[in-house]
Image (tube, rainbow, N blue to C red; front, side, top):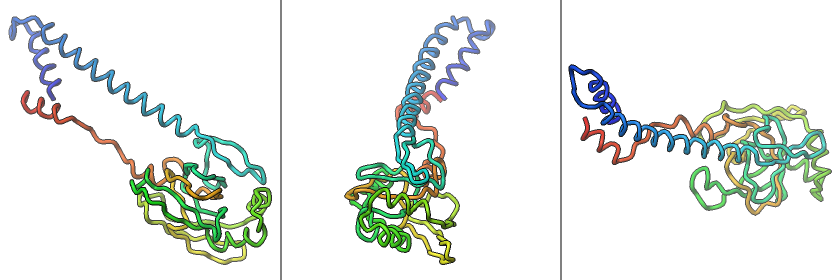
Length: 235
């Protein structure tokens, strides 16, 4: 608002009948303020885009048939099977298929999602994990990759939303069995794998559809306390 006021005063000074003052006395300070503000905003935008580029360029292991391939976060799609290892950051919202731990347990750090530093546990769908426990007791990657490639099931779930502690879905096996899915079976983008050697998951939401992205919303206009005071005094 203060800049608009000075712009209005500048326009008045350009009219000879209204003012005899040199318009440059207002123009130069106004231009300096506007240019400095534009440079600051440009610097912030560049940093944000670089951070996004770095984040989306991180490598991840994707199962293609029975072979694990390296891809970047930005190339992840719904339905991809992802292999995560200890301390890896989860790149998308995923349903846990199986893990290195007994009963398909997986421990995660959700500090980037909700600020909580205590570890939380998640668990693979019991019926799915049992398939790997029975057929790949040694938990060899090659055996697990082969088992996953032969799985046939459908996942139905809620539409993308911002609720971090809520998930409703069903998993329909090829034998007709339907299994209820809940938040305990899901890994959300932004959480980090802890105290778990490895974990396989299938992507259910990616990119802008993930819960962490839904929580970002539209950034509002921010003003410092000093700027608000200057505007009030000027007006």
